[in-house]
Length: 471
Image (cartoon, rainbow, N blue to C red; front, top):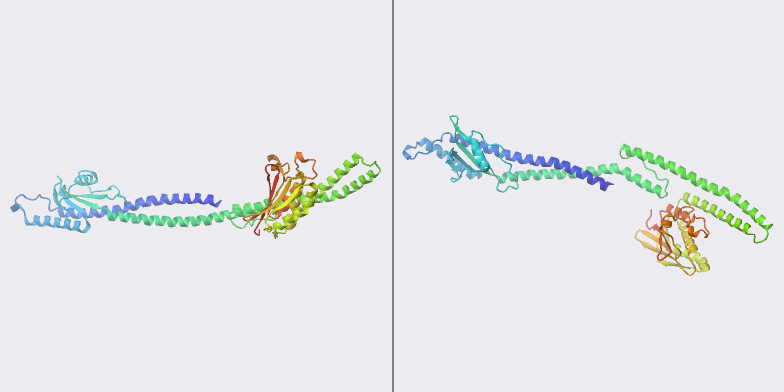
């Protein structure tokens, strides 16, 4: 569940950080450019103050020039040249007709279009430049033109133009963006760590509930949940789960007790009834069919009661798990059943490794194997084989009992193991329909499973799976 919840939280947090980081990056770029623009406006205003007193065009005759005017023009040109040499920013003062009063470099033209032309036009109208288009770090050829009017006696007589390179500004913007990205990454890491802790705190009771539910589903009815961690809603759920588990355990215990008591109490009347039948049979002619039929049904009823008592005990008894040589135990059970197999003409054999260990209750596993092998011998015709195989499979041990009997259909495979269920094709075979149910209960108590599958071309394959590591 955490793998599904964490991506959702991470995507939401990433969206929030992007929603905050992108505007912050745009603002950072705007602030850096605004600093440049304000600085250029201040520089242009200083040059405009110098140009106020050099507004007359140069006289055609050098004799008409005044020393004071030449000095001011020279001062303006030297300031522009020093400014250009120091900062690399092109600057010039132009008359209204776009002819230069002074410029550095000397061939600096007035832009005819774009941002520069718009700034020059605004300055002619008496306004300073404002809001040039934003320069981004990837605009390698981007420049910032700034214009300021030169006003004398209330009239705009000239315009100061600066044309600034943006390399350093773009580097500062990129550096600011890297700092924002680093902050976003750090915030994302902190958020992911917080999300891990939060989801762990929220989902820990859910995992405990899931484990306890699995334990109860596999027969460990004593499993409960400590309702002390997690959100209040999950703590209430844990308490409700414990109450439900208590009620279920109580009901199952009552059911087991009833089955055990009923089967035990019915045995005495049934034994007395069978004794009376035997006494009655002494007074009737030998070979009476009715007496034989009643005797058979009585024995069948006694077998059903014995199996019911065995099922109740199997579901109630805890497993005594031990590290067991499963291969040796299976081979021993095969040797025990071989005389009966030989009597029926069935070839019973063991295949597999001589020693394979696993964790199991030896008594319960022996009983389960007896039930499975007995079932295979019942339905396998004479001359056909029944094979018991033990194979290690990673962390598990598989015991397979394969026969060559008539097998079962898919619908019958879905019902095999149900209590009192027997295939309609096998009603004439002795049995109560409880043997495989008892086997499943015995195996489940020790953490083992039993599965059924067809054995091509015909027959049934029963697989018992045991853990190889301690539970």
